[in-house]
Image 1 (tube, rainbow, N blue to C red):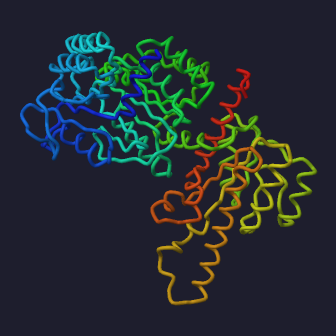
Image 2 (cartoon, rainbow, N blue to C red; image 1 turned 90 degrees about the vertical axis):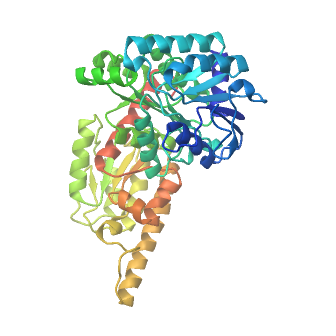
Image 3 (cartoon, rainbow, N blue to C red; image 1 turned 90 degrees about the horizontal axis):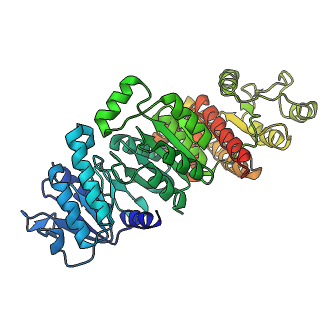
Amino acid sequence: MKKRMQSLEKAFSPRSVAFIGASNNLSKWGGIVFQNILMGGFEGKLYPVNPKEQSVQGLRSYPSVADIPDEIDLAVLVIPSGAIPDAVSACAAKGIQAAIVITAGFAELGDKGRALQDEMVRRARAGNMVLIGPNGQGIAVPGAKFFPWLPTLRLNPGVIGIASQSGGISTEMAEQLAEFGFGCSKVVSAGNCADLSWPDYLEYFRNDPHTKVILLYMEGASDGRKFFEEARKTSLEKPVIILKGGRTEEGTRAASSHTGSMAGSDRMFDATCKQAGIIRVKDIKEAAILAAAFVKTPLPRGRRVCVLTGGGGHGVLTADLASAKGLELAPLSGATVERLRGHLPPWWGPNNPVDMVAGMGYSGPKAIIPILMESGEFDGVIYNGIGWIYSMMDPVNGPLGRNADHERAVKAQIDENLELSEILIDYSYRWGLPLLVHAKALHLAIRKNYEAILRFLDKGIMLYPTPEDAVNAFAALADRYAFLQKEGVA
């Protein structure tokens, strides 16, 4: 496997790339993907291969891989499926160790396509090559400015690695992360997983120093036992989050026609995830939010959570959600209640959730969060309420009128939001316990550039659009700690 990992590294950090099927026609995949490599700023050598063209998008074209005078690390193949096996043989004869087969028309089409796919893999392995795909949309390596993939999307570098059997879902996961200010280390559209498959990608990401969190979209695994072994080994070192397609009979049929995968028993897969320490999610949004949560959030050392809220309704909802997720809203001790009384109004009810009774302003969370964190009674805090001014008005972009006093008052509130953000950012690291902040204006803040909220994302700290998102993240973090503790590594 070490040799295969070395070959796979050639795909993610090539010095030279042969693009077989490069085109001047930007309505074709060979034109779009080739242009994406050029536009992305790839600094290595790029050799288009097209026997019908003298040049492709400004670069000299070669009739075949054999005609390229230099050594090649990676081949990208976007030619008809029937021509792929011979092209793979030509790449192997050139000494190329890795290839990305974007072309479709293999196992997803049935027996005839599967036979063609098997022949492609046989030739690759005979030539000591590894293959990504086929039937995918390529890969992205933001840190190397290398984007040999279909979407005209150039991501920022980050620490989240994505592998997906669906090109569209890999793109959407990356887009969701980007919306929250999080980049990716690598993105792989794995397609049919004909050669390289889940155990390979798990092993690669586990050993990749640029990847801290692993995010998968999976429709099926050809070797369930090997997947389980690699997944468990990887989960002991890095969080693995998985979105599984083909959970129902209808989804299984769709997976078979999409990537040729047999999805298998969903109940058995769920049990496998729990044993392997994999965090399973229900949709793309949750996948992105949990991946972002694991980037920097400390793990809670249990399931005791205190909910701090600026409004009673959000506290009630969060309490319900937390209970449904198996989190414990531990009661406040007498000593903690006495410490809190000095910062809360006389009509405050000494309960968890701690309701600041919608009148505490900015001083409340500054004083109350340290009391809760230092009490020893909780494994973390969920705070509802940051950036409330932005959800009530648009102080940055909206008209403030000609009233100078009003303008000064709004600016003062913005400044207080900024100060509170800096304090909460500090609190996110101070005690080694998770502080999960629900910001209901988060999506609005991203669109309208509200600095007090965006400062969290700039520091790699996730904010949560809804109380449910915050609760789900806390539960997932607690589940991971429990898994690591059980395995003796926490």
